[in-house]
Image (cartoon, rainbow, N blue to C red):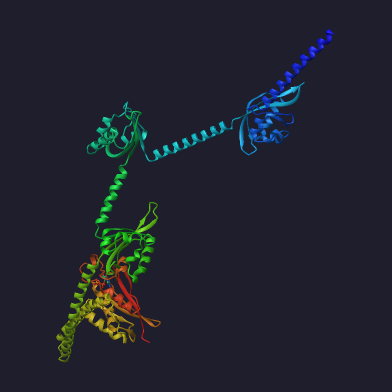
Length: 625
Ligand code: ADP
C-alpha cells in the first residue's frame, strides 16, 4: 500500500515535471520562432530544413518556398557558400562570416553569418545559422567612400586648375596676425624662401598711387558694414628683382560667432601680361576708331564682323546696320563678281593692295575707293577672315579727271595749229624743191619731222584721254603697210643721224585696220628704239608673213630692259628708273597706248630684251583678205 502511494506520488511528480517541460519547450520554440535574429538550419546536403520568421522576412520568402530548397541558391557568390559548407563539414565554427544573399525582390543583402554543426554520435544533423543583416551599414560605407573619392577628385582638379593659371592662395588669421602664403603666392611676390612678410612690409612694396586705395578697401572690409568680398588690382614692386608688377587680389572675410573678423583668405594673380595686352588692344582700338580710312573685318563668306566710324562716314551705313550683314550691301550690282574674286585670292593667303574700284553708299551714290585687303588668321595660322582698309579716293579721282581734261583740252587746241604748221612747212618744201633750194628743202624736212613728233605727242595724249573714257573708236580700212612704214622711217631718220633704220620684208602687204592708230603704234616703237639707244646703232623693222597674218618686229641695239621691268612696261605711266635712263625724258604712256591700240585690234604686244644688248618689240596683224 505504502509502495503504491509512493508510485502515485512519483507519477504525479513526473506529470508535473513533464507539463512544466512542455511549457518550457513551447516557450522556447516560440522564442526561437519569433526571435528578431534570422535563424535557420541546413542539413548535410545543403538543404534548408528549418528557418524562423525573421529569416523568412529578411529574404522575402514563405516557409513553403524556403524550407526544402538549396541554401546555395540564395547566395550571390557560389564560392562563398561552398566555402561556408566545407568549413562547417570540417567542424569549424564560423563567426561573422561576410556573405551576400539575394532577396526575393532581386536586391542584394549584405550579411554576417555565424554558424556551427549539431552532431549526434559524430553524425551531421544540421547546421545552426545566425544571420545578421548589415546591408544598410555596408551601403552607407560605400556611399561614404564614393563621396570621399569624388571629394579627392575635385580637390585634385581644383589644385591643378590653381597651378595651371598660376593662382596664388593666401590665408590671413586676422586675430593672431599669422599669414599663410602658397608657393605660387610667394613666387608672385618674389619671396624666395619661407620667410614671413608682415602687412606693413607688404604695403611698403605697393605703388604709392595704389596704396591708399588698397588700404581703404581693407578697412572697408574690416568694418563689416558692406560686402565681405574683396577684389583689388594694384602695382607691387616684386621683392626679389624689384620689378613693378600688376597684381589682382580677391578674397573673402570670415567672421567668428561674435561677428568679429576672424579669417581673411583668397587668391592672388599676376595680371601684368594681361593688362599689357589690354593696353595694346586699347591702343589698336583707338587707332582704328580714329582712322580716316574705313577699316572693316569680314569672314571668308563676306559677312561683316567689324565696322569702324570712318566706314560709317564713307559708306553711310552704321555699325548696327552692317555687322552681321553681307559686304555685298556696299558693292554696286555690276561689281558683285569682284567680291568672290577678292575672297578667293584671300583664301589663298594673298594680300591685295591699292585695288581701285567703286563702291555704293547707303544713299546710292557711287564712290571711288582704293582697297587694301589682308587675310586674318587664327592662332593656328588658319585664314578665318579678312581685314579691309578702304580709302575714299573720289576727290583724288576728280582731281585726276580735271588734270586729264586739261591736258586733253590743251592737246586738242594744239592739234589744229600744229597741223597747219605742218601743211605750210610742206608747201615751203614744195617751193624749195621747185626752186632747187637744197638748204631750204633740208631745213623744211627737219621742221616737218619735229612737227610730226609734236603731233604724235598730242595724239598720244588725246588717245589716252579717250581710252580712259572708253571712247576710243577705230576707223578700220584696207591700207598698204609699205608706204606707211617708209614714211615713218623717213621721218625718224631725219630726227637722228646716228641711227641706221632698215626695212626688211615689208613690201606688198595689205592690212585691214585703223591706219592712223597702227601708225601711232609703229612711230612709238621706232621713237623708243631711237630714244633708248643713246649711242646709236641699227634699228631693224622686219615683217614676216605667217598664215593670214604678218608679224612686225622693231629691233634695236640699245640699253635693253631688265626682266622685272619687262613685266610692267605696258602699264599706264610706268617708266623704268635707273642710271641709264635718268636723262631720257618721257611720260610712260607710249607703250601703254601701243598695248591698248593693239588690244582694240585683237592683237598683243610682245617684248624680248637683254640688258645692254637691245630690245625687240613685236606684234601680229591680220592681212586684208
Ligand atoms: P616713255 O618712253 O615716255 O618713258 P614708254 O611707255 O614709251 O614711256 O616706255 C616705258 C619705258 O619702257 C621707258 O621708260 C623705257 O625705260 C622703257 N623702254 C621702252 N622702249 C624701250 C627700248 N626700245 N629700249 C629700252 N627701254 C625701253
